[in-house]
Image 1 (cartoon, rainbow, N blue to C red):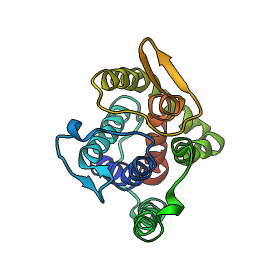
Image 2 (image 1 turned 60 degrees about the vertical axis):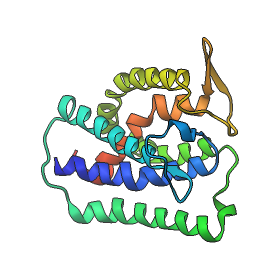
Image 3 (image 1 turned 90 degrees about the horizontal axis):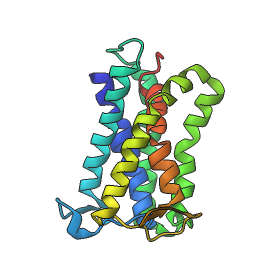
Image 4 (image 1 turned 180 degrees about the horizontal axis):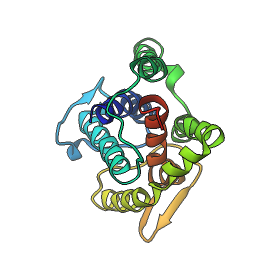
Length: 208
């Protein structure tokens, strides 16, 4: 479990908060204050509720993968590899985002922020497809379950008005009376489990 918890710490807390903070700051989505169980936003931007959700979301993906798809269990991680490829770059990125927020917020404002940061988050998956196609195929096998799950969750959240989309997007998906950005469909519903598992296998559990 220590390998899974290390993955949750890196992906769910450090990278997850960095991604969520930038997207929320750029109005890629909006969670109304009345929908929050904990009425507090970190730095006035990112809801604590969403950080908790990110942790549980990553934990679910890693547990499903480890239980149903992993060929071998790894109980120890290469700490040096984990720190150099995962923790240090992610922590530096988060630090730069926070410093920019306080001293030069204009440099972290983007049009089409969901598209920009979604593509950046997907870069490790592209690397995995090119350099480690067998690993990529094993990771992709997990995706159909989460596509169905996240699509169901998306429709439920929209029905309950748990979030709204108020930013700039390349287009929209219409499903009956529900409407959400194409970026939401691609980067969260369709490929987010692949992104999480790619980061996990490249930076945390690198033994394949």
